[in-house]
Image 1 (tube, rainbow, N blue to C red):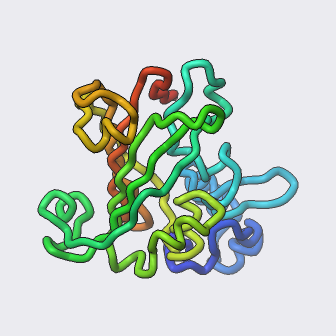
Image 2: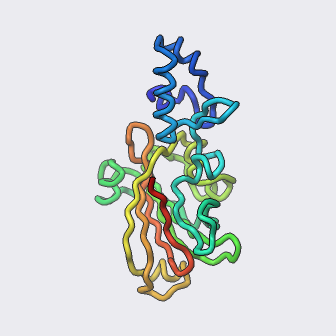
Length: 230
């Protein structure tokens, strides 16, 4: 694990074979295989038959690591195919962490943070269905601005990974029922006070360090939250 955290093998790179790792660390191949199996179960590594084992990356396909946090689907969508949503970045600004952001991100009150606001729309009809505010520790994403967000061709998590070496490994989510305030009602083309689903997400990197606090507000008129537990 510490070798992944130290960046010896970057996201998307293939790690050495089990035999090579066994020689390097002076352990049995069985011990190496068990360790790799555990990290694969945690989605830190991805086994590809006939190719090898790779460090999980948010630049890969949706059914690997890149979109495994996505849980919103159109009511008529195949839940195995992912959501039919696209994002439009509205704002990106720097601020000082208030008490809530400081507590959730595990940083000092008043520490610099970067906030991103995005509008989520359906890919087919361009209808707005969600608004997101994303809070990031400022020291981890210096240089993140509106221009970069507009220019980068990949996903938001891929941007964090490739430009800022922030590899998000897991997330915790909480769901709430809330009412639309004036700003979000206008963005979502709803009446103020309309019911919304709020999904609050805290994302973690190596060492259980908190690197993202995301608050997403969704109209559930035509979309629903889905999560398969196994």
